[in-house]
Image 1 (cartoon, rainbow over the protein chains, first blue to last red):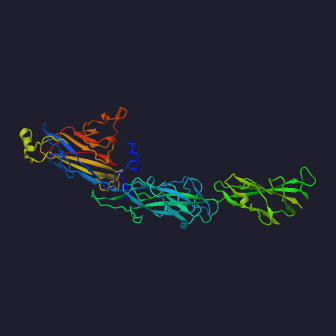
Image 2: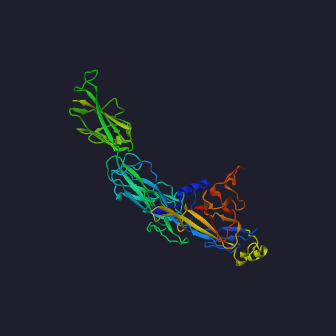
Image 3: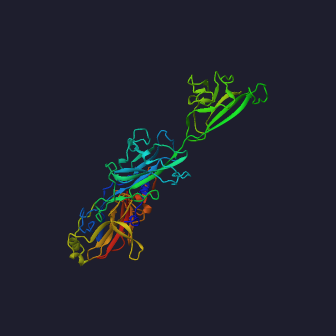
Length: 389
Length: 167
């Protein structure tokens, strides 16, 4: 039967839910599959002016007067397979290479009238697929299916599940059973191996309706018993084109990972602080003191940079100033907005463990001193001084 | 349902002998109307000329949200006309009446919320919690009644019906 022939007088289940709203039910419950609906009409009439005993109807016609002399006309409510897949994410989910696992999340709702299971499938959309959130960030990267894992919430929402990935979920490719009206959350976790910053990976998630209690192994199929109105048929009622395909017992949704890394920008500037001749302004002559300022900026608006360390070669013909009276305490490196406010760089090794030391050629300011730079517009500034030989 | 006392065709003939001799010819256990109820669904198809057409078939596949046509046929099986023909049908449980779908030639339509009082839609009211009342919505109709205007002649057929949607 083509779609042309299956519509008939069928109202969408959504409109039926609207009718449920009219009656102020929290959620309209569909008539369960295998329910027998019965009907029997009655006719009253007169012959001449004499009222006659009422006659009840039957499926084939009844003319015997009297109560219960007729018979019900019956049909069976068939099993409608219907479902929705929702995308919980409202924008691309940031994920960092090698970082903690990130996830995109979906919901599966049984909108049919019978208990159902589901087989779950994840695919990566092809490059140039559209941004699922309507923006300009189309797919341009594949994470690799081997690096994607489906986790199913501990239970349907309100029945053991909380809709949040909290480590208690099972890694599985099926939902064993949802009763009509139930919704469960599914997470797709990504283990990002490597990627360039600002890559986008579309993740498509599909739920295929299966027979309840089969761990998703037995997919539902449409059945028909022909003209027999009292045998149960299975009818696919999902209408999810163009996102999916109508009447196939499956529904899908697409979310997106945005593969992002921190984007550091380092700027170094120099200022002559003083010269031996007390010049005003001071000039860069032998014996003059020059202060270098290294500005570390994170241009990423989504990803902080951690464990930042810098190694800065001393310019030729300069000597690191180990004692700087203007800095706090004994610090010879001054840090603004870092892990510390400054450190003491010793010669050769980081003897005091504050992250700073210097060699004949370089100044090293380690992660212990700088720490991290949060997302833009956060910055960290490192300053030190040299004397011109 | 309260039925009138059984007045068989034979006894009726005694009472109204002369009104219709044809009545006497009927078997005593049969009434004058054969009443049939069918559950149908509408199906679109391409007719012989390739045009899209609609036909009613048995309700083979019905799922929540579908509309079913309850078609009731009354056939006068006597040799005399019958009058005051009133067909009553309760909307089945798990279904709701679909507004403006009741049909039946030469009939007066009325509806009821409880099977007791039947009236036209413009007079069918529902009490509200605040003491006011409002017109009943079609989906709240619980019974449908057709009253035939005039007589149903021998061998004549009256076809009535309505659409109801499966909840």
